[in-house]
Length: 311
Ligand SMILES: NC(=O)c1ccc[n+]([C@@H]2O[C@H](COP(=O)([O-])OP(=O)(O)OC[C@H]3O[C@@H](n4cnc5c(N)ncnc54)[C@H](O)[C@@H]3O)[C@@H](O)[C@H]2O)c1
Image (tube, rainbow, N blue to C red; front, side):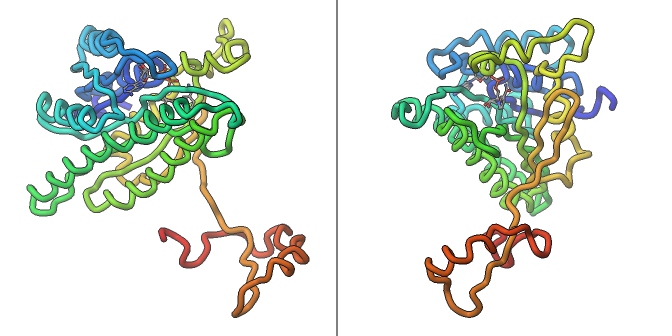
């Protein structure tokens, strides 16, 4: 890889003031992208605001010879998301890459979950991914029109979580939002393909302020003297650099779990059985009676249900 992989590109990283987003902003800038570092500067539960988080990372990029500006908008605000996309285009003349990363945690078991904790997490993650994507998509569509239909290209990298792929007790709000982000990734990948825009999602694992709130995490994520630090948030950013580049123009609708030295390519829902009653519906009694057959090992492999795909 050369340090010019992203030369001439303009990127937004949401929640770029800390943790994984900070590392992503630094890496994109190190490969030549001009970066808008967005961060509300919220506490890990989403409360408060502090402009210094985004400013510090933009300063760090400039000090290293890169190009960056800070933005302090709340990504889950419609107007804030619009302002963020406009700032990138007004400041640097274009937008190529949107990395949706900003996030918060408010864990609780379902029976203890408050309405406020449910709403805040769904809002920041789900709406906070959709709103910037919506305005970026509108920008790329306008560009395509202005070029007489010529695809302008563009990149969206969303941030999901294994909690949303596999479930995690105590995170019904967070897992629902992250699973929603995966669903949204698939929809946006289909919608924006005609504009040459790719949309992918990563599910990272790293030691950050967010994971520090999870019981026992600090101990098992601790860096060990002289060994590769698998939990360093810097390990996540190279995948985002690749997905942002021209080399990934044909990679879309994919989900990657990223941890330490690993990039795990994931595969989603797949059909195990076509359990067919033959020209009529099943009765519940029949299903109860033949349950063992339904859950028997797949007879002929697995695949996508015919006609179910994309409906
Ligand atoms: N750390 C992990 O292991 C892990 C695992 C799975 C998913 N993730 C996801 O990675 C992303 C980054 O998390 P992190 O671990 O680096 O956490 P972090 O708390 O270090 O960083 C998140 C940043 O987002 C900002 N932010 C929060 N709400 C915002 C809003 N409304 N608008 C703009 N900025 C806002 C915060 O101020 C903070 O700087 C999150 O989406 C998180 O859910 C992290």
